Structure formats: structure tokens, C-alpha cells
Image 1: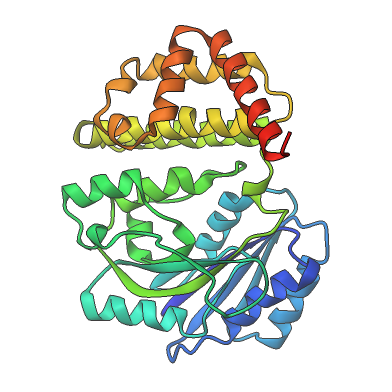
Image 2 (image 1 turned 90 degrees about the vertical axis):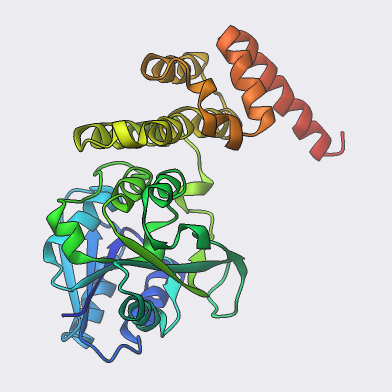
Length: 342
């Protein structure tokens, strides 16, 4: 088997989302054998019924895996990996879709270059279409080629989306790579860590993956629970890198990525997205960061890549949690008044 495509599925039956994704997969132009492993993550709608229908219509390439307890996407991906027999592994979100030649072109790039990880760019769209939407660069050309120490450092900080790549299965197996289970943002941990084990990364310069933006998407609804999931992903990334011996070589990069995920991104998404943010949670974010990295504001990447406004606000919180909390809430209140023309 040349390729295994793993599709985590949870309640995606409505509005034809799941069917549109699966249609794009069963109609791939690949000449070599491939399999689609759809993992139903304890859906409560009729997603499983749709999956069974595809399994009956495409028995030679389509396989359904089920279990009764929701394990989120990381758990579903791990379940798919256990069943996968392909030389290459691809992942796709069950509300997204790809061009018919997506996997053929990614595999051809791997054959041409000897890469063990291949990706491309993607489209942001808000309807089911194969028209090119807003094109987003998933990784830079500077990150491609033979992965030396400099490129590995870059991939720790900006690994790009994992669903817009294919991976050599042997690398995953030999290094016991997997995903955190039971949390959102599992790729925030897995993406940077996995990238350290691959030796050559290449890109197809086409936006062949379609990322569907809709109101039920994970990124559109911020809760404290989801913020805690991102914090957990950052902790798991740090722990995995420590346990696998990467801290000495990539300490500054891992510190920056941890602080960005655990603290900076989470802080401002929480303050902006949660209706009634709690001062105690804001304190917890800062405390958890400085306990592990007390001098993170001196990190070279933090100084280079964190926005000036964010750095100023983080410095304010370092002096007073309460001052930061009320200053930022007032700032958002004024901004919302202005947006309403008040």
C-alpha cells in the first residue's frame, strides 16, 4: 500500500460537509494503491451512517474505525495510525477537501527529491468549491530541502499545519510518534516535535488543500477549556522535547514556542474571546510561564517575533496582573464602541 489517508470524523454530517470531503478522497488520481481510514470519534449525528455508506460503495479503498468514547482528533488520528498500512501517511480534517491530484502531486515530489515530508499551500474558503480562495502559505521555501539544524529550528517555531502534508510512515513508526489525545490543538504539540525527525522537506507550489471556514470550527469559539487545551499542548511539547533529548540543542526555540502557545496566544485569545474572563486564570497563565522560563522576555525569538503591543502588555502584566486585566478590558470596550460607531 502506497498511501494511507486518515480522516478523523466527529459530527460533520450536516450541510454535506463530510460527503464533500470524502468525495474528494475517493476520486484521487493516484495510480498506486491507497486507503482511506475514516475514524468516527463517537459522533452523535449520522456521520457514521455516511461513513458506512462510503465503505460499502468503495470497499477496496475505504475502511471505517469506530469507538464509543470521544478522544478528539488526536485520539482519532492515533487510531488511524494503528490501522494504516501505507508507505506514506496523510491526514485531512473531515470538513476540508483536496484537489483530485493532491496526493499524486505530493507523492511525485517525494519521488523526485527523496523527501520524507512533503506539503503545499492551502485555500481559505467559506463554501464548497474548487475555485481558488484566499491562498495561505503553509511553510516557507526557506524551510525546505535537507533539514539541517537551522531548518529544524525554524520548523519548531513555525511547523505549519499537519493536514497539509504527507509523511513517510517508517519515520513515524521508528520514532514512536503520535498525537496527544483528549484535547484540542493537538497539532501544536505534534507538529514541531514530528518535524525534528524528518530529514528532507519539500513543497509543491500549488494551493491544493481547501480549508473550510464555518461557524462551528474550533477556532471560532474561545472558551477557558479550549485555552487550557492549548496550555496542555504546550506542556506536552516541552515534556516530549525534554524526554527525547532536544532541549540542549533547541532550547531557545522550544522556550519560545512554549511561551507563545502557553502564554501569549492563550492570554490574548482568552481576554478577547471569553465573555467574562477571570483574573485568576490570567494570573495562572503568567505564573505557569515564569515558573518554567523566568527570563522568557529576553528570548531572542520572543523579542524578534512577538508584536510590540503584545510585548508591552506582557511587560505590564509582569508588574501587575490587576493593572493589565482592567487596562485590557477597558481597551477592548473602547474598541468595540468605536466599531459600532459610538
